[in-house]
Image (cartoon, rainbow, N blue to C red; front, side, top):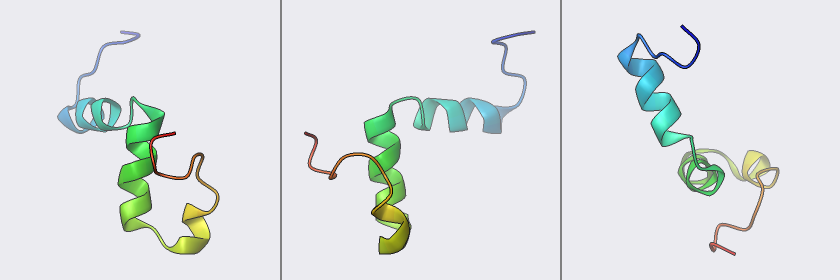
Length: 46
């Protein structure tokens, strides 16, 4: 069962948040500045 995804939400979450830079960008767009300042990178793709 390890690695198997039985729930669609789990699959969506893992596919969206697989890449750290993509996840940070998505979160940065929806979280307050106080939280964004704790995320890695500056959001410019560097």
